[in-house]
Image (cartoon, helix red, strand yellow):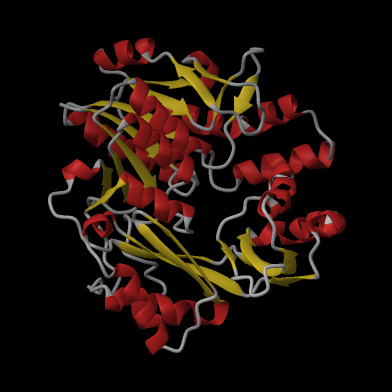
Amino acid sequence: MARIVKKFGGTSVANVERIKNVALRVKKSVDAGHEVAVVVSAMSGTTDQLVGWARDVAPLHDAREYDSVVASGEQVTAGLLAMALQDLGVSARSWLGWQIPLKTDGVHGSARIADIDGSEIVRRMGEGQVAVIAGFQGIGPDNRITTLGRGGSDTSAVALAAALKADRCDIFTDVDGVYTTDPRIVPEARKLDKITYEEMLEMASLGAKVLQTRSVEMAMNHRVRVQVLTSFDDKPGTMVVDEDEIVEQQVVSGIAYSRNEAKVTLVGVADKPGIAGDIFSPLAEANINVDMIVQNVSMDGLRTDLTFTVPAGDLDRAITVIEDNREHFQFERVLADKNVVKVSVIGVGMRSHAGVAATMFRTLAENNINILVISTSEIKVSVLIEAKYTELAVRALHTAYGLDG
């Protein structure tokens, strides 16, 4: 017998028929003797509709009332799934965030989890009852409903798994696991049986949309074993686990790419101590995340060029911030480019193997792909290239590292 938290996303509970299919899947686990808690998202499209209604009523709405509205989607799903389970003869009860309680801070719309008291749910599970929990929501210090923001249902599922001391957290999505790269670009991409928290975190932050970075961070911090699998097929998925659980590490586990990149170059920046801090501080104050950074060598000791990347959606704001500080920054001109993509090779095996970066650079050179910016970490090498070479670069690197199935 195991204690398992199962999380079902919006596509898995998109309509009544799919909710009934989820109930059958949960019943199968209960019949096998497992203790089960289920975390659900709103039915597909529901949250967008609720957000639209809130904005139509009041464009500058009260954030507390906004949370009250958008949290109702998960409440409906939780109640329907509990009813579907009861109809199958399974003891089940729905729970909202405040009933657990799942306590958060007071930042409405993007609250962070502060504490979860899982004692009553554990007691009920011990009696054979399935807890069907509304994801994405909690209760703030002022006893108002809060929502957790992007990826909130995954995050609440992992946090509940930690609080309940679950053996595993199964996250059901519309994909059947984590692949070595995007199968839409590389048909030879292979599904991984296991991947480490660190690798999954890098892949999630670099564009892989299987899991949100926030939920992976939560799993890594609390050492919650997470399985990514599909609700549309009855087969194992990919386990996200501690590095110690993987006997022999691949040098490279996957190739990720992100189209959400824009390149900014400040030409003729004064080459003096503190100038980088002067440039990046206003961007930080504007909540603009700066990623890859490269500074050219100053030939005369007076002027240099500074290149960095920002999310594509923040490019216009970044340019505005830079122009507003033109006199303070002391640069000649600013260049911007949205036609770029970041491609990354990821693998914890890099820690003990040399030549990973060399293979990447050689492969790109053989395909006449110019590298614009390079950044590295202990288990990742990323390059910025022209967007038109995305598919070619991903396919070539996938083959170069022996990842083709």
